[in-house]
Length: 343
Image (cartoon, rainbow, N blue to C red):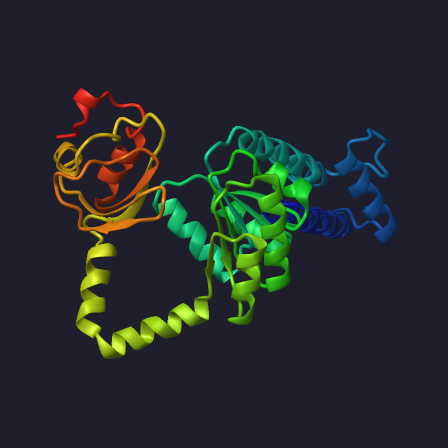
């Protein structure tokens, strides 16, 4: 998309040029008393600096007027030329450079998220991901929404998210998760199927626009299906029935002073968290609380005893400040057992 600023500069430049031609013609008519034809001809050859002979002998006043006419004309022509160069550089050429730079940045991404759809829901998703310092790529075929994504400095691909090649371009093989927030349930289903085929282990969170689509999306391979209208209605009902409880949770989770979240952390094979007790992990990371442990077999232990030993391939549901949980997740596999501390 060519720059509107450059286009405005071009319009202003041409208006100025025609204004100078009019002023030059009128000036020669008044100062020298020439005919309209001679005045226009003299103005044009003066502005273009072609060096043709003067139409008639100029008076001293006419020479002074010609000097100022040359300065104004050359200035306006130079202004138009620079605006033309900027217009084309910021146009097709600029788009190509920007696209290549963005493709290069996307190709370098790993453990990122892919957001399919940048409507109202997609924009909220992108905002939240940004607030959590998560890297992501937006895919949408609407040029206006992609332009908005670019204006927010988001990595974005203007294309159809249901296309396998587009998903590969977004780095589906190395992505940490995919969020499908397209406005059409059929498109979300196709994206889910394509993603599951390209990356069988990736978590897929999908938006459902109606309740009947939830089951189909889960069958297609979605890890989680979210129906915004359904969740919105449930939240409104909870506020009506238990306003104090909901307000308390929102105050903790959405605090502006310190973001506190609930996170699930996987204890993989060979993780340094394995074989440690709940107490040892909580002491290593101040202000966090392990709320539950889910084993590989699916058994869930709520509020585990401090002496409970954490096994490999289990998942910890942890509550605490966002920055501490980030450190905890980041050192889960790399920190030596005897140095598991961020005090």
